[in-house]
Amino acid sequence: MKELDYLLKDLEGTEREKEYLENRFDEMSVKEQYTLEGAVKIIPIETATDLINLSEQLSKFYFYYKAIDDRSLGEYIARYKEDATDEILSFIKTEQLGREYHEDFQGVFTDTGYMLQRNSLKQIYDGTNLDKLTEGDWTVKIKVGSEDQHEGVWINLPDYELSSLEPDAMYIALDTLGISDWSEGTLLDVKCIFPNIIELKDQYETIERLIEDANNFGYVCDEQGRGKDFFIEHLESAMELEVCTRLDLALDISQNLDCYDFVPSGDNLEKYGRILAKKNGIIEVDTILGDNFDYIKYARADIEKRGLEPCQNGFIKRNEEKFYYEFSKEADSIKLSMQ
Image 1: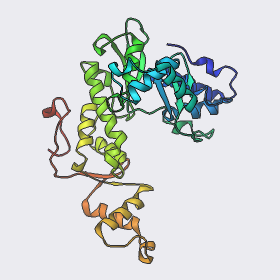
Image 2: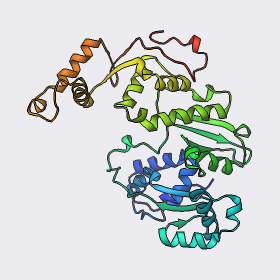
Image 3: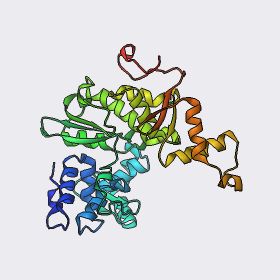
């Protein structure tokens, strides 16, 4: 893998910013690295602040893997964007198609693919909030090595190839590693965005099974419980209650959040009170009474009524709903707060 340290050369910035970028590069997935190498050809980078902002928003770029010239770009567009079969593809003027596409969208070619910016960037890093940055879009990230790549490459999960039908993180990583199946690789490291999930490397017998659960857990987190209010806070609190350290159990908990009564704290407490008052039909929010209703007090009354206990993100209690196991190993040996 090509090192990214060259991007830091002569770059204006503080030592802390450069250290952050070095650490970010060290754990950047192979797809992120390829994307960043193209993105810096589109977005002017003059300072470490610019590069940090860019590295936080790589999802705002399209990356067409191995579309490195007009012909391969045309083939990519025909195959993945227009669903052309191999039979149809043999009759497509791929070089002409790629040239026209490039002229229309004005992306950039790199040694590994074609880059397009799909959304404008925001000023996420303001010079003071390094500790608040996400360091990429992932729920679980794994580092896998191979005979050709002993040091390994990082892969961010979830992977969306099954839904997009385009080469994504796993396909790119397998190709970079020079292997065709995960059984040929060696698991070197694993991280989860939730710090309570620990020792992940030892939780699975195969990389395939780890990826399967990591993808499923990532999909759930990305979908936020299909738009459920306070989903992440609810999930974190349920995991806290169950002292959850395993990914498979975390995945099961995410599918059984109805088993946990939860009220968020902090700024979300008033929002919860508004939602609850509207749901219960006791007040019209956009009225004179609604404008003078104490939603925090109403939320606290609900907490007391249901006997919820404090936790890091609010208040929670296990209710009597049945907990359904689907992913957890050794479910019989797992002692939840209420069985």
